[in-house]
Every structure is written in structure tokens, then in C-alpha cells.
Image 1 (cartoon, rainbow over the protein chains, first blue to last red):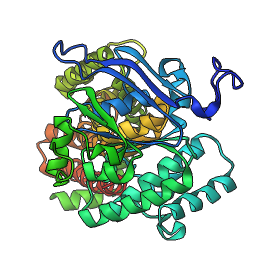
Image 2 (cartoon, rainbow over the protein chains, first blue to last red):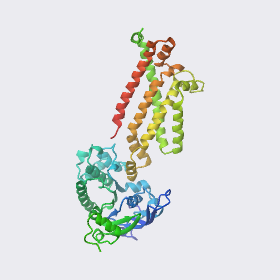
Image 3 (cartoon, helix red, strand yellow):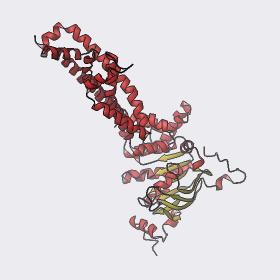
Image 4 (spheres, rainbow over the protein chains, first blue to last red):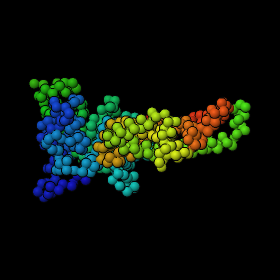
Length: 268
Length: 210
């Protein structure tokens, strides 16, 4: 569904080498606050199949960065391209239906059952009923929940971990190419979090999605990401694969590693 | 004659007045809900209309009910003596709680839920009808419940402009200085109000999500 790229001819530019998401000199500022921009000088290319962890402290701009991808926020200058096309030129509804979005547990609709939550986008897309049904069973199994056991339950009847699984299932339901996850495991207890992280790794290997994961947890970033993008005060200060991230000398990277007691090896 | 004896001897009359009263209330409440809920949905996205609508509804609420009935009598089309004038006045009174609760209910939906809905690619209309409205329904129902109790009470005054209902006994009782006759109107009106309050509170609880 992200294949609609009118400006790009397939034979000129091989599909695989084109970034699926690209930030070009992005600035984001809330107009009423004249002081510091929330994001500035952001340039980043994300390729198909990558799992990018946007790592940063609270207020570093990582959540905003992700909301620029699905058009929940609009750049002040620069451009964000999805599937080779400027987000501004996309029909916002079409763009978002092609991007799975997982936020902390509050994102499930409390008045809808698990099944209704998960099947929402496929239904909005007018999928035939049998396809919705089989897709529901498929995604619920893929997040480790029994489709029949949970179909009639409401979010309030689930544990935090179950809610988060349903959130992931809902984001995957319409089979989007891109998955945006904003601190999806943030509200969970450490044991459940570790369990979901492990399952997410398996899931990711099977699905070959492009994932952008927002986190303030360096361990989570190291475990799940193929590349870590470190944000500080609205700027990208470092970018590295997990194994290189451990050796980074940047003071903010050191702070994160020290706080997680992972700083022993790389200090210079 | 005590109130109980009066009620027994005038049973048919009291029942007829109760029926009249109920019809007055049901008609007014239906119109008020059919106007107030959509208007409340409309003003969520229109701040200027919101200011005007809420101010107007609040001002209407401050007009003493007997005066409002009086003001309406000389008006063409909606005015005059009888039930239709009373219904106009009752609708105007019922409007504020319904309008305000609809607006408050729709705008107090958790911002994270709304952002999730938007991020999933729901259109504004889908967010309004499939997310905001169901989540606001119990608050809206609370407004309808408040309006119903007010309307049942105010409708007794409608007898002053010839609309009938339980107020007939109250006005007659005042003129006759007879507690028994006043109570024959006041007690059924109170019972109606309590009953409406109870039944609508059950409905409200059913609609509550969390």
C-alpha cells in the first residue's frame, strides 16, 4: 500500500535501495513558543526491513519525530518522505492506514472488544468479513494470544502485557509495511517487558517490517534495534548499530550506557 | 377532605392529567435531545458557534419559567395558549443540560485515545461517531437525565398557559387554598421525576465504559 510513488520509476531506482522513510533537514517548532525548536537539523534515511530505535531522554523530541512520519505533526521546514513521497502530498488517511501505530497502553479503545479493536482498520478498509476473521486469528496468534479466548473481552479486562499485545496485533492487522512504536513496553513490569521484547524479536524476524521504535531504555534499544539513533535536545547526536553503540564516545551515549551499567567496556 | 381521599375520588382525572403531563415531557425531551445532541456535536469543532450556543442556552435557563411561558404567549406561530407553547418553553429549558453535557462528554475523551484513532487513519467523522460519541454517551445521558427531571418539574407550570398536565391540580389547589388538591398534582409529579431519574440513571450506568 505504500507502493504508490508517482515520481519514482521502478527501473531507474531499485526498490530496495530507496529509503522507505526519509527526513530531509527537518525542523519542527511550535509557533507559539519562540524559543528552542523541538527538532532541528534532522536528516535520516530509514531503509526497508530496518528496526530503528529512537533513543533519547524525555523531551528530546523522539516522539515528535515519529509523529512526523504518520502526519500527526507537520514539519516547520524540511521534508519527511514516506515511500519516496512527501508526507504533505499524501492523503493523510491513506498514509496512516498503511502505517501501524502502537502507543502506550492507553491507545486501545475502551468501548470496543479485543476483536473490534484489532479489526478496526481492516473494517474501515472494507475487507470482506471472512478475510477480516482470518486476519484477526492470524495476528492474535502472532502476538501469543488465543483468538477465541480474547475476542469478546474489553481492554479493561486485560493485564498490561495483554493490552500491549493487543495493541501490537491491532497495528499489524492491516499488514502495514511500516510499524511505529512509541514506548510500547514502557508501562510494563520488568518481567513482562522482557517477555514481550523477546517475542517482538521473533515477530520482527518473521514479518520483515520496517519498524521505528521510540524508547528511553538503552537496553531495549540494544536488544531490539538494527540501528540506534540517539537524540538530544531535538538533534540527532549519534547513529550506530547496537554493537558500535556500546563503543560510542559521545557524552550522551556514555550517560545512557552508564545509567544502564553497560559502560564498562567502551570508556576511553 | 384529605389528599388521599381526593386522589381516590378523582382517580380518573389525576390519571388523565398524568398522561397529559407525560406526553408534554416526552415530546419536549425528544425535541430537546434531537436538537441538543447534534448541536453539541457541531460546536466541538466550531468555537465561535460554541460560545454563542452555550451563552444563549445559559441565558434561557435564567429566565423564570412562569415569565418564559408569559413571553411566549404573544409570539406568532410558536406562541399562543396551549400545549405547543408549553413544549417550546420546555425544550428551551431542557436544552442547556443536554447541550453542555454533550459538549463536555465529547471533549473530555482521553487525548491519547484520540491520537491513536487519528494515527490509525480514522477520518474526523469516524472519530466522532465511533470513538468520541460512544465514549461520551454516559455523560450525554447524564445531561438528558438532568433535563428530564427539570422538565417534569417545570411542566407543572405549563398549566398556567392552558397546557394541562399535573400543574392543573396545583394551580386549582392554590386558588382553593386546598393542600389536598395541590398534593394531587405535586405527588404524582414528584413520583414521575424520581422514576425518570432512577430509570435514566440505570441507562447511564449501562453506557458507562470504565
